[in-house]
Length: 309
Image 1: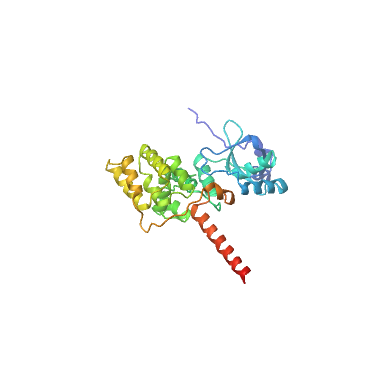
Image 2: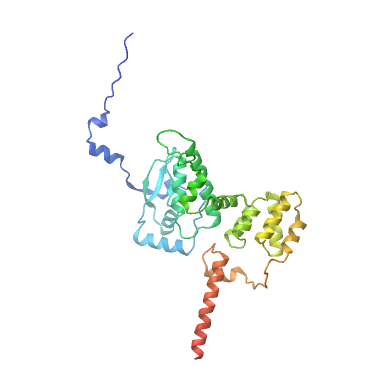
């Protein structure tokens, strides 16, 4: 039986095109793509806030256009999926512009997730919930890549100097593996409690402890915090978690723990948040608001003294 002879013949395109043309076809290009053809990234953890900064960006886009192209990937059914550039797309919509410059790149789900997270972590201000879900998404993608053994992937899970994905993620983000783990724990919080963390009403470490409570107990805790207008300290959060793990946590126990006097507790001056919210971007931590108000009062006192001289 004659052996079949296989010849690696060049394609028609290769026969009638130059090497320069073939190289150019492989090179990424910037394209103007209609906004209507671009969908958002699934479960995008970063919020696109319509705040003053977005209004400023929209005005800039209106005057100068989008200066840095967005990154999109083609979708199987047609159209594109945004990987990096959600704020630029929103600003273009506000500016009344129908297209946006984009780099089109074919990416796997995991590659797209890692790029999406890394590009958004460069923002100046990131909410705890945004960082929590972003770290969780990227860590899962890194672990999946680490399980692959083909030549096109760089196994991140176990092969880089024997490091775990959590260690590598920590090095890339400049945080310890324990801190990364704490952030990811926040994704277990019930949304109303997570909102309180974003708003600065609950500190980060107490929130991590509360994330171990079952959802029903978290709902009871939230109702009690709302009714009593208080939040737990770290020591109280640890105690609430212990009672929960021992099967002894209920509404009365939560109320009793929250009613305990906190160490070094002093009388608090409270002001309705809506009275000062217009002076700060949404999501500004309570500590930053307090620091800004104190600085403003110190400046006011200095001017008053200068006027009295």
